[in-house]
Image 1 (cartoon, rainbow, N blue to C red):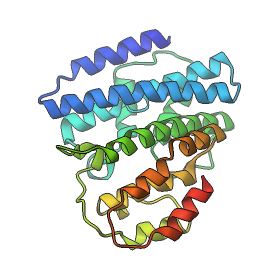
Image 2: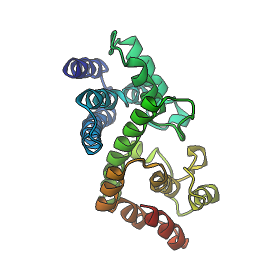
Image 3: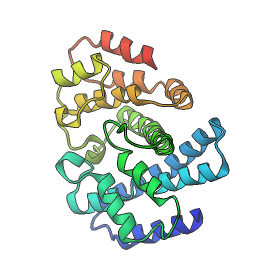
Image 4: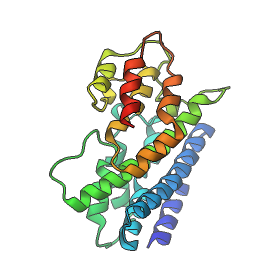
Length: 249
């Protein structure tokens, strides 16, 4: 099932012909991201001693979690959901339209995990099985994004990748709503993000939504929070905030 699913996804992406080099770069970036998220989720499942069946189900979720990103970027030129379309909802439309899952018995669980992989909070109404797989994809996804964006922020850039920065202005301010959310140990609302500093703090704040010890250890090993803090360009004293978030990790 997994090999057939990967083949269907590959053919679907090939059918969406990029119209310029920027779109092609972002398509490839998402293909590589998806492959790494699948590896992360396998490692997570192994760390939890999940069954082969559970691991394969998690892999399918990883393969499909960002399938809406391709049409999102092709049509809107951004990955910023609140200025285009919710990429998880679009992904579900694509999955159903392209019949990626056919009559697969656990497809409703896959739909739930994909629908909530990018949401600020998980609902209290989902089942224990749904909750497990939602947490798996959220951790696996965040872990790769941490590595990806940290390396990007540390590069000497000849040109910026606006898709990775959501086309946000690189100014020295920090929004009070973003700062206060983190101080209160809350996930930052994307609508409060006004510039690149705010976006970096939003990403740092993901530490409040990490579900498994395996993921936490990988974040500590990669020193991702420290490294992102080092790339925040502002005149504010962030020492208290840094101490609070890094201690939590």
